[in-house]
Length: 269
Ligand SMILES: [Zn+2]
Image (cartoon, rainbow, N blue to C red; front, side):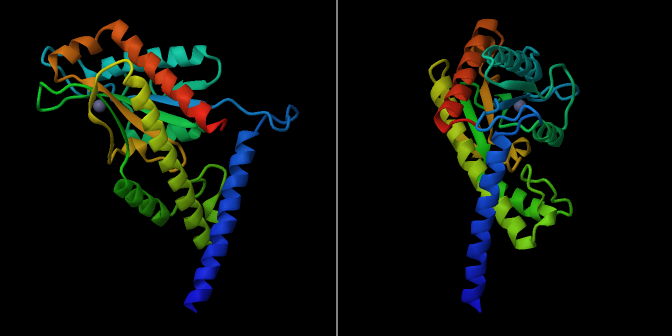
């Protein structure tokens, strides 16, 4: 009995893998009706998320500079340079000083069918001597917890892009979600490595710059995501640098190179 159920699960896993692969192929070749050309790749959509905004200032420096303004300026510069490449569709979750709940940021990225999601922040640490940039992906525990909550929720439809899980048998739905989540997690770690490599050429990195944590904004199961802490507003030197346009442009150039490396290495979406 046990063998038979294991065998069934293996078959379901195989079917689920085929479904995800087919969906990714269809998504990659999706074009407007009438203009469909086989094997023409669509350009990737990159969603940039400047943290905080509106009533939520984020970290505040000793002399009253808000994180929300620094990250919006840097994210806007990043978006401008990336869009000028004409190889990506670029969208900002916010382009003004507005408050956006974390779940709304993820929802917008999913609605825009993002291929990449980058949340931009700046840190404030208790030790004011500490400085440097760091990159976060979702921790495995948080990812498991999120997946369990999603799997348990009533509304599982469309959780993995084009695949409507509510129409799948329960086993298939869970396996599809699990496969998608694992693939997304691996790609997010690759993305974080690219970010650390490229940004490390521009600015000082924090000790152990590649980290993982329980960030709600990184929980889309089907979008490779990372959160960049541009530096420490608690450090007087770095706080001064983060406010300078030239420094923000250096950060933006490093972010653009990381995105280009990510898509160049893994191919088109
Ligand atoms: Zn922040």
